[in-house]
Image (cartoon, rainbow, N blue to C red; front, side):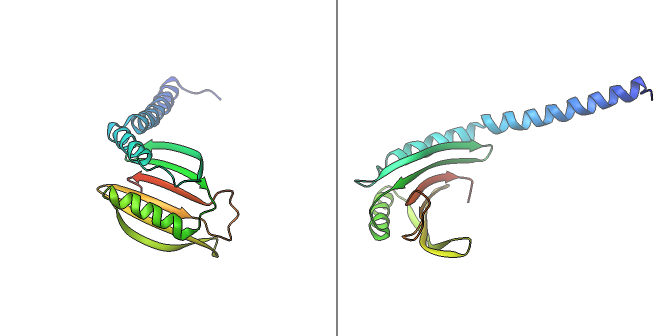
Length: 150
């Protein structure tokens, strides 16, 4: 079977055009000035709050997309939920964050004693995810700050 030149040319144009659109989307996604600025501000705010004494942080990561940014770290500790909550409530409220949500969290409908606290400051959200005294995830809580995710 023989393919005509005009048909081959139109197929190539469609494939290259689609590839160009995909490339442009990923380029814009990775280079969004607003997301990069928000990520930098979130990182500075995140690092202005040291973890409680005796807490070990690991698995720190940052990321951004076209209209989103995230900074997150997991922690291991012997502190209980009330101590962790009191510490972050104090640290965040001193910096102008307001508690907007305090609710139980579940792992596939299992109640492991987890709680999720959310705080708001301007367009940013800070989240404290306590995994629960009956959890076995390899960490006790995660703390994150985000823009555009909530």
